[in-house]
Each structure stands twice: as C-alpha cells, then as structure tokens.
Length: 415
Length: 69
Image 1 (cartoon, rainbow over the protein chains, first blue to last red):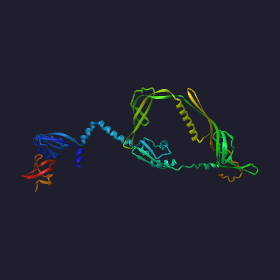
Image 2 (cartoon, chains in turn blue, brown):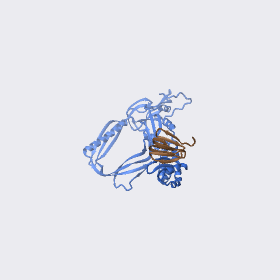
Image 3 (spheres, rainbow over the protein chains, first blue to last red):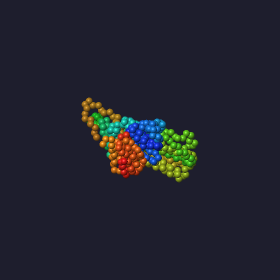
Image 4 (cartoon, chains in turn blue, yellow):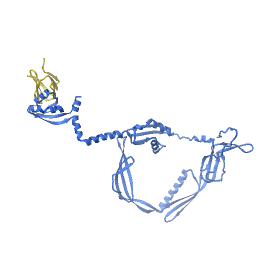
C-alpha cells in the first residue's frame, strides 16, 4: 500500500555527500520530510525521498554544507512526463490496443466441419444468406438461431454445433448417413403420370408394370411421345369410357437410336517452354483487394503466375483481415510441336475411352458400332457410327382430362 | 519514564527506535543516536536505515551490539 502511494506521488533516489549527512537527516526529521532506504557508501550516502521533500531539501543542504544529486527518478509523475515526450509511441500503443479490441469483436474466419454431401461453398453461401459472413460483428451473431436454421433448412443435417473460438466461427454439422427416399411421387397420383420419350428412337424393349402402353416393340417414337399413359380407362358396357383411373406409370422401356460421334485431334500442338526467368513479387491484401509490392510492369510477354497467400493470425484462432504472401511469375515461350504416330494413337484411344465412359455413366449401352480413323498430315479424325440403347423416358403429368360425371363416384387411384 | 527512548530489537537483524532526539553518526559499522539522557550506539555490519522520521526510525543489518553511554 505504502509502495503504491509512493509510486503515485513519485520519489527520487539521491546521493548526499559533504560535511555531515547525519545533521541533514536530523533536519529532515524535524521538518517532517520522510526519507527511507538510507545507505552508507563510505564517501557518500544514498537515500529515497519524495518529490515534495526533495524540493524542501534545498535550504537544509545549504545549512548543513552538504550537496545532493538525483540518481534515479521513480513514480507516476515521471512516467507521465516521459510518455508525454514520446507522444508517437504512446499514440501507437493506444492505437494498437484499440485495434486489437475492435478487431477481436468481429468474425474473421469461418470453418466448417463434418460436411460430406454438402460442400463448403454451399454452406458458406447459405451462411451468407443468413447474414453470417466474415468481417461481421460477433454481437450480431445468433448462434442458437443459426443452429436451428441449419437443421431446419437442410433435412440432411441432423446435428449442428456453432461455436466461436477467438475470431473464428466453427460450424460443426453431422449429416444423415441414411439415404433419403423420395416419397413425394405418391401425392402426384391424383392426376396420373405418363411416361414420355426423352428422345427419338425405336422401342427395342418394353415391359409395363402400371399404366397403359401406347407403343409396341419396334415402334418408332419421337421425343415427347407418350409411351405409357397414366390414365387407365374404365369402360361402360357400350365400350365408351366411363371414367379414368389415374396411376403413376411404371415401365422398363429401352429406346434405340443411331448416333454419330466424331473426334478430331490435331497433329500439331503448342507447348509451353519455361525460359527459366522468374520473379518473386510480394503481395499484401485485405478483403478482396490486393496490392503487389512491385510498381514496374512485368517484363515478360507471356507468363504463368502462381500465388501463395496466408491470412494473418494471432495464436490459433484469432484471424485478422489481412493476407500476405508472394506471387511467382514465370516466363514461357510457346513452341509448336508435332505428335509422333505412337502419341497420336494413344491420344485417339484416350478420346475414344472417354466417350465410352461418358456413355456408360449416362446408362447408355452400345448395341452396334462402326469406328473409322482418317489420318492426314495435319489431323486425325475418328468417326464412330453407333446404335445406342438407353432408357430415355421421363415422367410427365398426363394430358387426359378426367371424364366429368354428374355424380362423383369413388375415384381413388389404383396403385 | 517520560521521554526515554524505546528500542525494539528483533533478532539481530532489525531494530526499531522511537522517541530519540537525533542521529549523531551513521556508517555501515555503527549508528549512534542521541536519546534524552544518554547516547545509544548500534554496532554491526552492513547497517542501513530503512526509514527515518521525527518520531521513529528503523535500522536493519547484522547487529552485533547495542551500547548505552
């Protein structure tokens, strides 16, 4: 306590030498000047004295024939005056502290964890829609509401936990691992669903499970033709339609159609050759902006640039809105090269394999194929005449209107 | 006794003196104080005065002897 008072009021360490230091001490005592920490160093004494006491010391020094010199100043009055001389430093220090306090009130980084089916981009876009983004105030964040909104808007998310760690927003989610079945189809049954052709072709296979088939094996159909009708007629005795029972059509139908695919591959190609010239440019950025620490133009006609950026962060999770890094600019020249025969064969084979894989992925099967390759000095052309088979059908609401009856009868759909 | 000096010695490390008139001599080996009727001498090594006011003072160091004369 005493130390604090002494510190706040300020004190000095002085060195006293001369005829009689003891007399000076006695006079100090008589004048109620507090001295402490008195030490004898042989030729001189050192002691601590309050600032006010030091100013009152002058006549006493004269009287006793001693002299005093200040060795060290302590306490708040000296500290303040020292800081006053170092204005820029103090302003910088205070500014720095304000900066930390202000920036730590914002979110500078969003991390998402536990997502498999939902990509990070999708979730970040969703958060943006919800008003959660980087550089937003922490106080504007409603964690519980955000958790609830995530669960409600995405059926696949079964568990959420949003937490703030420093300036980082951590979003943990758990996705439902069980596949979801679409059960919405049943509700559309009231109106009936047709199966229609998704493309032109010849019916090469048809088995109907529900609905009325409108085409037979070997029939030629155009895109949009109804293949299986979802309206099942119920006839009167005079073979007129009494009413329709609407069902969701279900059938295995395969359409066969011809398709020509051709792939061109030029013998010549351009190759980048790096000249070995490269430059490193340091970049600083904040938000979307970026500044290069280079003011001259890049002296290359053609170049690749690769960039490495890091976000400034303090400790583990305190991210700041600044990025730093460097860009490496590599010069290259384009030279024209020619593929060898072997290379061309491999390239053609790769192109062909790619076509087949794509078709396979779409569920298209090749029934027949006839592949030819034409070569000349400049390019090779692969042409394939193919007969493809595909279950190219889709569901569409039936266009048949229900027969209006005077008295409504039981019209529940038949499964 | 009215006006007599009160000397409180704690071990051989500290001494608190009240009611003294003044200091006569101060070195690291000895401190001589003036009491009402007699002088008090503290002898020892590395003696220093922790504080010194009109009413009391505190001495610390290795005190070997306290002598009245």
